[in-house]
Image (cartoon, rainbow, N blue to C red; front, side, top):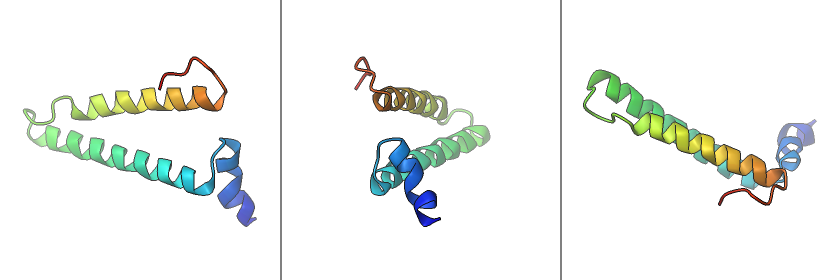
Length: 78
């Protein structure tokens, strides 16, 4: 049961538990920062005009590169 909860998915994507934890936390922090920027922008539209959208696009690209690497695609961008 514990192996399934903590180790199955990281192994499935070619990572250790710690590697997956670090990636997931970093990704979560980026989402929080983008969300906060979007909320500030909602209150004061002149602030953070493109912060949230730029971060979301960068995150989407990072995920595509990561998935290509996991699939063994040699053309994955670094």
